[in-house]
Image (tube, rainbow, N blue to C red):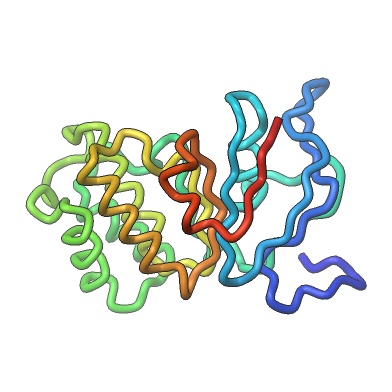
Length: 205
Protein backbone atom coordinates (compact mmCIF):
# COMPACT_ATOMS: atom_id res chain seq x y z
CA UNK A 1 0.00 0.00 0.00
CA UNK A 2 1.44 3.36 -1.02
CA UNK A 3 2.13 5.95 1.65
CA UNK A 4 0.54 9.38 1.11
CA UNK A 5 2.80 12.19 -0.03
CA UNK A 6 5.68 9.98 -1.16
CA UNK A 7 7.21 9.89 -4.64
CA UNK A 8 7.55 6.26 -5.67
CA UNK A 9 8.40 6.82 -9.32
CA UNK A 10 11.00 4.25 -10.26
CA UNK A 11 10.96 2.60 -6.82
CA UNK A 12 10.03 -0.96 -5.96
CA UNK A 13 10.63 -0.62 -2.19
CA UNK A 14 10.74 2.45 0.03
CA UNK A 15 11.62 1.88 3.72
CA UNK A 16 12.23 4.29 6.60
CA UNK A 17 12.80 3.40 10.25
CA UNK A 18 11.41 -0.10 9.83
CA UNK A 19 11.27 -2.17 13.02
CA UNK A 20 9.85 -5.56 13.84
CA UNK A 21 9.11 -6.97 17.28
CA UNK A 22 7.88 -10.36 18.35
CA UNK A 23 6.53 -9.73 21.83
CA UNK A 24 9.38 -8.21 23.84
CA UNK A 25 12.01 -9.31 21.34
CA UNK A 26 13.14 -6.78 18.75
CA UNK A 27 14.09 -8.63 15.57
CA UNK A 28 14.79 -5.59 13.42
CA UNK A 29 15.71 -2.04 14.41
CA UNK A 30 15.37 1.20 12.42
CA UNK A 31 16.11 0.02 8.88
CA UNK A 32 15.81 2.32 5.89
CA UNK A 33 16.60 1.98 2.17
CA UNK A 34 15.28 2.57 -1.35
CA UNK A 35 15.22 -0.04 -4.09
CA UNK A 36 14.81 1.01 -7.71
CA UNK A 37 13.10 -1.14 -10.34
CA UNK A 38 16.49 -2.21 -11.66
CA UNK A 39 18.13 -2.29 -8.22
CA UNK A 40 19.98 -5.09 -6.45
CA UNK A 41 20.13 -4.74 -2.66
CA UNK A 42 22.73 -6.95 -0.99
CA UNK A 43 21.87 -7.59 2.69
CA UNK A 44 24.57 -8.83 5.06
CA UNK A 45 24.92 -9.36 8.79
CA UNK A 46 25.59 -12.03 11.40
CA UNK A 47 23.02 -14.62 12.47
CA UNK A 48 20.31 -12.97 14.51
CA UNK A 49 20.78 -9.54 12.91
CA UNK A 50 17.34 -9.59 11.28
CA UNK A 51 18.13 -10.52 7.67
CA UNK A 52 15.38 -13.13 7.39
CA UNK A 53 12.92 -10.84 9.17
CA UNK A 54 13.65 -8.03 6.73
CA UNK A 55 13.20 -10.31 3.74
CA UNK A 56 9.88 -11.60 5.07
CA UNK A 57 8.72 -7.99 5.39
CA UNK A 58 9.79 -7.25 1.82
CA UNK A 59 7.97 -10.36 0.57
CA UNK A 60 4.75 -9.33 2.31
CA UNK A 61 4.80 -12.25 4.75
CA UNK A 62 4.99 -9.98 7.81
CA UNK A 63 4.18 -6.36 8.61
CA UNK A 64 6.42 -3.86 10.44
CA UNK A 65 5.84 -3.04 14.07
CA UNK A 66 7.05 0.53 13.45
CA UNK A 67 8.32 2.68 10.62
CA UNK A 68 7.22 3.04 7.01
CA UNK A 69 7.52 0.33 4.37
CA UNK A 70 6.06 0.38 0.89
CA UNK A 71 6.53 -2.51 -1.53
CA UNK A 72 4.95 -1.61 -4.85
CA UNK A 73 4.67 -5.00 -6.63
CA UNK A 74 1.63 -7.09 -5.80
CA UNK A 75 2.25 -10.36 -3.95
CA UNK A 76 1.78 -12.29 -7.19
CA UNK A 77 4.69 -10.38 -8.74
CA UNK A 78 7.15 -11.25 -5.96
CA UNK A 79 9.37 -14.33 -5.99
CA UNK A 80 10.47 -15.45 -2.52
CA UNK A 81 13.14 -17.98 -1.61
CA UNK A 82 13.22 -18.91 2.08
CA UNK A 83 15.58 -21.10 4.11
CA UNK A 84 13.11 -23.92 3.52
CA UNK A 85 12.44 -24.87 -0.13
CA UNK A 86 8.63 -24.53 0.28
CA UNK A 87 7.88 -27.45 -2.03
CA UNK A 88 5.70 -30.49 -1.43
CA UNK A 89 8.02 -33.40 -0.72
CA UNK A 90 5.49 -36.05 -1.78
CA UNK A 91 5.18 -34.53 -5.26
CA UNK A 92 7.62 -34.74 -8.16
CA UNK A 93 9.49 -31.67 -9.37
CA UNK A 94 7.15 -31.47 -12.36
CA UNK A 95 4.06 -31.74 -10.16
CA UNK A 96 5.35 -29.11 -7.75
CA UNK A 97 6.03 -26.57 -10.47
CA UNK A 98 2.78 -27.33 -12.27
CA UNK A 99 0.88 -26.68 -9.03
CA UNK A 100 2.63 -23.35 -8.46
CA UNK A 101 2.20 -22.46 -12.10
CA UNK A 102 -1.54 -22.93 -11.80
CA UNK A 103 -1.67 -20.86 -8.61
CA UNK A 104 0.21 -18.01 -10.28
CA UNK A 105 -1.68 -18.46 -13.59
CA UNK A 106 1.58 -18.64 -15.51
CA UNK A 107 1.11 -18.26 -19.25
CA UNK A 108 2.54 -21.17 -21.30
CA UNK A 109 3.10 -22.93 -17.98
CA UNK A 110 4.47 -26.21 -19.32
CA UNK A 111 7.00 -24.55 -21.60
CA UNK A 112 8.29 -22.33 -18.79
CA UNK A 113 8.50 -25.25 -16.35
CA UNK A 114 10.49 -27.27 -18.86
CA UNK A 115 12.84 -24.38 -19.53
CA UNK A 116 13.57 -23.85 -15.83
CA UNK A 117 14.06 -27.55 -15.10
CA UNK A 118 16.54 -27.78 -17.96
CA UNK A 119 18.30 -24.56 -16.96
CA UNK A 120 18.81 -25.77 -13.39
CA UNK A 121 19.82 -29.30 -14.35
CA UNK A 122 16.69 -31.06 -13.04
CA UNK A 123 15.08 -32.21 -16.28
CA UNK A 124 16.25 -35.81 -15.98
CA UNK A 125 14.92 -35.95 -12.38
CA UNK A 126 11.60 -34.23 -13.14
CA UNK A 127 9.51 -37.34 -12.41
CA UNK A 128 11.24 -38.09 -9.10
CA UNK A 129 9.60 -37.12 -5.82
CA UNK A 130 11.10 -34.14 -4.06
CA UNK A 131 11.68 -36.21 -0.91
CA UNK A 132 14.27 -38.22 -2.85
CA UNK A 133 16.24 -35.11 -3.79
CA UNK A 134 19.54 -34.08 -2.24
CA UNK A 135 19.80 -30.74 -0.42
CA UNK A 136 21.32 -29.13 -3.49
CA UNK A 137 18.61 -30.47 -5.80
CA UNK A 138 15.92 -29.18 -3.45
CA UNK A 139 17.53 -25.74 -3.54
CA UNK A 140 17.54 -25.82 -7.33
CA UNK A 141 13.87 -26.79 -7.33
CA UNK A 142 13.09 -23.99 -4.88
CA UNK A 143 14.83 -21.52 -7.21
CA UNK A 144 12.71 -22.81 -10.11
CA UNK A 145 9.61 -22.23 -7.98
CA UNK A 146 10.65 -18.68 -7.08
CA UNK A 147 11.40 -17.80 -10.71
CA UNK A 148 8.46 -19.60 -12.33
CA UNK A 149 6.09 -16.63 -12.60
CA UNK A 150 8.79 -14.22 -13.87
CA UNK A 151 8.54 -11.96 -10.80
CA UNK A 152 9.11 -8.21 -10.81
CA UNK A 153 10.82 -8.44 -7.39
CA UNK A 154 12.99 -11.34 -6.21
CA UNK A 155 13.55 -11.73 -2.47
CA UNK A 156 16.20 -14.39 -1.89
CA UNK A 157 17.36 -15.60 1.53
CA UNK A 158 20.74 -17.36 1.28
CA UNK A 159 20.11 -18.54 -2.30
CA UNK A 160 23.48 -20.34 -2.56
CA UNK A 161 22.79 -22.51 0.50
CA UNK A 162 23.21 -26.20 -0.32
CA UNK A 163 24.34 -25.62 -3.91
CA UNK A 164 27.46 -27.27 -5.27
CA UNK A 165 29.76 -25.21 -7.49
CA UNK A 166 27.86 -26.18 -10.64
CA UNK A 167 24.58 -25.11 -9.06
CA UNK A 168 26.14 -21.88 -7.81
CA UNK A 169 27.37 -21.06 -11.32
CA UNK A 170 23.88 -21.69 -12.69
CA UNK A 171 22.49 -19.25 -10.13
CA UNK A 172 25.20 -16.70 -10.94
CA UNK A 173 24.09 -16.79 -14.57
CA UNK A 174 20.41 -16.54 -13.70
CA UNK A 175 20.87 -13.51 -11.44
CA UNK A 176 22.96 -11.73 -14.06
CA UNK A 177 20.50 -12.54 -16.85
CA UNK A 178 17.50 -11.28 -14.87
CA UNK A 179 19.00 -7.96 -13.76
CA UNK A 180 17.48 -5.88 -16.59
CA UNK A 181 13.91 -6.95 -15.76
CA UNK A 182 13.82 -7.62 -12.00
CA UNK A 183 14.67 -5.92 -8.72
CA UNK A 184 16.46 -7.97 -6.06
CA UNK A 185 16.78 -8.15 -2.29
CA UNK A 186 19.36 -10.84 -1.50
CA UNK A 187 20.68 -11.87 1.92
CA UNK A 188 23.86 -13.90 2.01
CA UNK A 189 26.81 -14.85 4.20
CA UNK A 190 28.99 -14.82 1.06
CA UNK A 191 28.66 -11.24 -0.24
CA UNK A 192 31.84 -11.44 -2.32
CA UNK A 193 30.07 -13.83 -4.69
CA UNK A 194 27.47 -11.29 -5.81
CA UNK A 195 28.77 -7.88 -4.78
CA UNK A 196 29.53 -6.99 -8.41
CA UNK A 197 25.79 -7.28 -9.12
CA UNK A 198 24.78 -5.10 -6.18
CA UNK A 199 23.65 -1.52 -6.73
CA UNK A 200 23.35 -0.96 -2.98
CA UNK A 201 24.29 -2.70 0.27
CA UNK A 202 22.66 -2.95 3.69
CA UNK A 203 24.70 -4.26 6.62
CA UNK A 204 22.61 -5.25 9.64
CA UNK A 205 24.28 -5.27 13.06
